[in-house]
Image (cartoon, rainbow, N blue to C red; front, side, top):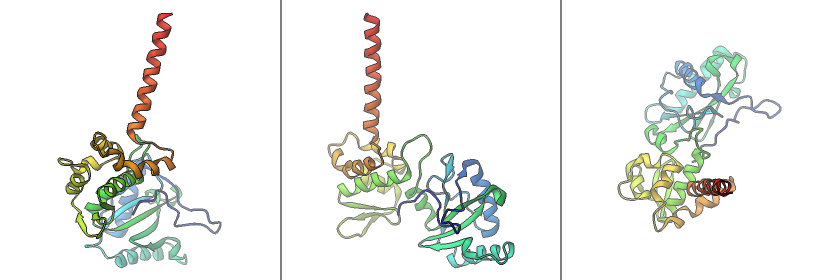
Length: 256
């Protein structure tokens, strides 16, 4: 599973989404409003780029499948629609797909602010907040690119990375581990910890000196190139080259 950043579940008759991006400052107030309807906590279970980037295309929120029934949650949302929007089709407000319950959510609880799509995603929140970690505005990479790099590294070592399950044996599909610290150590090497898997940059920093580096990043390089992105090492080298050129040019001017 890779989070698709951007809500497009709810559309008007013209096929255009009726939801919009949400500003970071509006995320928690909107979730606080939603908590009053669902009766479950949302603000501390944000996934992907929700509440991290300056704006988000939707709000991805983990819901504990061991404590909350999807049918019960849908019933609460339906009840809100029927009470507050009598006569309107509940499907224009609430949808289900896979592990998700989607809700067309008024931003800050006020329709005048527009709507954002909230994806309530059922699973193990603790693991999901690790596996579906997003990226902020200070990087060219998205959470998707972190996933692709992790998958590339796992593949080169006879394993598979699953954001739903954890680290799997590539041949048997049997679970190796779903413990974040153990995943980090098996993927990145002895002594690695879960925070080393936080971002493309932190992952790359742990593997860039390894003799099997090229094999580890082979698939990721191809995937990144399709998005016109390079791995951090290439970016760093390019910056260094530009700095060196400026130094040389400045020296040339001084010599003259």
